[in-house]
Length: 198
Image (cartoon, rainbow, N blue to C red; front, side, top):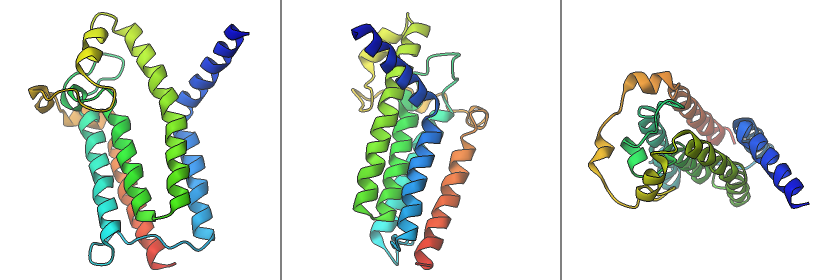
């Protein structure tokens, strides 16, 4: 019985990890559609109209920066990334995504949406992180134990000068992180349009 439960859990975790972007967009998109249909008015992203909306915009761009910083360093499935933001935490791409989502939630300014999106993020990305750590630990058996000893999962354990090296524009472009940056700008424009027409 325990083995069956473990197998089902592994299958579910693998499915969620593989489909995490589609699941996230579907669920969060449904929430936004509900808010638009129900007549909710978000904050403006412009500082002279809404301070909280502007703070949310800054946090969103902070998340974009974190993701771009990480994407310019990581060479997926080739080497273990330990420089740049990876010298501070093991999952800066996901941390950046969290700040992007948090920023948008502040702009949207809806209590139910905030709780729902946080629940979605936790239920989708915690299994994903666990699966990725298991795969990475198997792939980089020699260096992974020392890396996890020195670098925290999300929060930094210590500061190091390795954060200032190894960023590459070509690597950032190769990882297609420009798509997330452009999508964020488009999404902010659409939220502002939503504000002005609600």
